[in-house]
Length: 70
Image 1: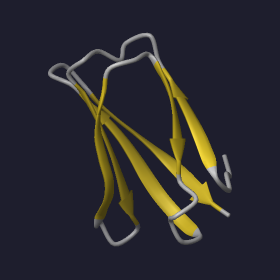
Image 2: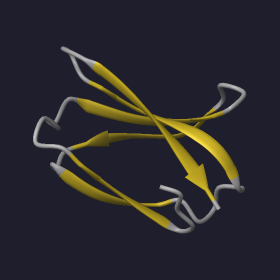
Image 3: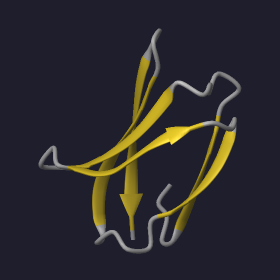
């Protein structure tokens, strides 16, 4: 982090019920997808430069991290 085109998300706790959401600083959801693997490479090249928030959510937890797109 920061990133230009792609990010790699990796967590051993990702299950088939994990939802990935990316929000811009205004709170608008710009990406949403269901994760089924413990590591994913996500293309963010279409997103404008700026700060985003990556949220991983499943039935037991919610994790949020900041992402800077160059």
